[in-house]
Length: 231
Image 1 (cartoon, rainbow, N blue to C red):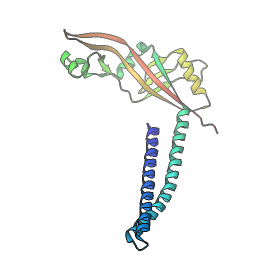
Image 2 (image 1 turned 60 degrees about the vertical axis):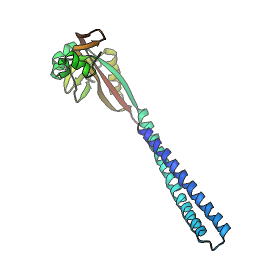
Image 3 (image 1 turned 180 degrees about the horizontal axis):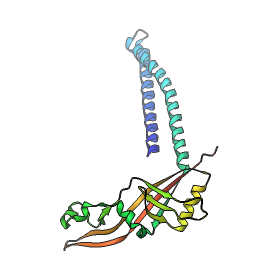
């Protein structure tokens, strides 16, 4: 998105530069024609020539500024692309969430939509959607492990509360990344957090049917890491 805006600014600058260059040349040529037709004393011709000459000079200056602007914007685009190339992303799913239900419920907030009637669910355009009894919106998500040990699990923590752990293969991947000297920075973000009791409205022309059921908790995290810049 940021790169798209930079490219748009470059294209706009190109269009304005071409417009002013063309307008100045037209005015200069028109002034010369008036001078040739009316003689050297013909005032409007000299006026047009003078204005055109000033505009041409202005275009020369603006062209230099424009070229500098293009170089700076292209440099920003190149830098952003190199920055993105250093970042890597992996999606990991939690396992054994049922073992951490006490912690999970500490983060739970009652969902008002769970108490909606059939008409309210339809009115709020919740037809066919899973409306869970509780919602979860932790502010901070972390992956924690003891790197001092050769082998170890990687716990998933939300607001300092453990809500699950990664699968063994994913845990090995995370530990390898955290141990790597080529990694400069790591970031962990919550991708999804849902489960438990839910209602679901099945709407048809015949009748409305509300399904009451429950699912296992599903928690996934987005793990990002940045490689060190090679000099």
